[in-house]
Length: 84
Image 1 (cartoon, rainbow, N blue to C red):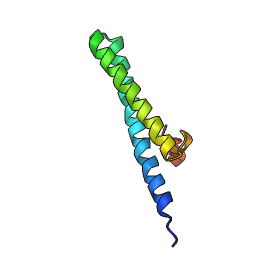
Image 2 (cartoon, rainbow, N blue to C red; image 1 turned 45 degrees about the horizontal axis):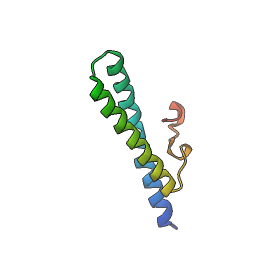
Image 3 (tube, rainbow, N blue to C red; image 1 turned 90 degrees about the vertical axis):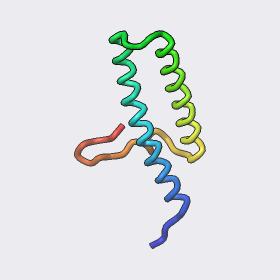
Image 4 (cartoon, rainbow, N blue to C red; image 1 turned 60 degrees about the horizontal axis):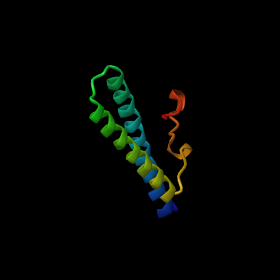
């Protein structure tokens, strides 16, 4: 067996970023529901927006650092289809 450490690291980073992106998407949907139901103040909406903006920037930075694309983070779940 020939294991290339670079591929192992890149694969692990892709898996972690996939999970982070999945959680981010779920949190964004929840935030949108709360905004639509007027459950957040203007200040809370601003903080949530800034947090998601910074998270998206960091995800983009990490994808660039490890030479990953959005397609690399989309796991194929077989008969269930793609994750993201």
